[in-house]
Image (cartoon, rainbow, N blue to C red; front, side, top):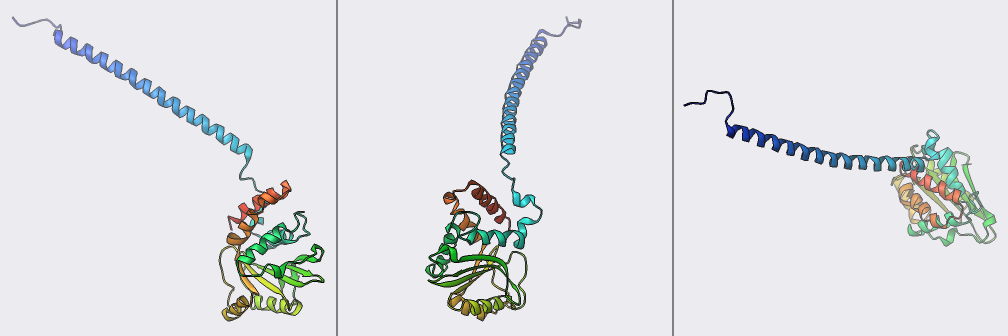
Length: 253
């Protein structure tokens, strides 16, 4: 006789109870896995928060040159005056010949005799900015007028400015007049760049280069490495901090 009651078959009841138990175990396992995942995420987030707080306190991006608007890219108000003081053995940095000797090492690697630009007495070194030539201004001019020798190193600092007509030719003429025995003109740019032909013709540049009177140098390849190699020797913490921040600025040029 057929089952006329509404009671489910025993097999169906057993299946439903088994399925219910299975889903309960699956849900418990899923929740447990989620808790582990959330705990890991929370731990990672807490570590990141802690790192962020430490970084904020360390202030690695705090740089006096970038805080002063546009100063980092101003060759007249920042780069030339700072280079002038650093290259001056009598400069306010108080590190003597340290930076100037580092420059001479760079020049030696470029085929310039370091000995030709090394004076015996620091008192005869002078470094000035915006030196008038009668028809222009040399950005940085280092001179030595002593009883043993006389020489000059002129730096034309070109960050974003363009060359003026016959500018380098005029500066070279000034050096030839006032320092006929020994002078060097450095054309300083952020990245490798030759003088504009209107400032100095390629033939004039070739002749001056062969006579060791002209070299093209860059902030990236020469000035920044020059300064970095002096870090360990700088004895004044304030000067070292300034150099570190200045090198950060040079990376942005």
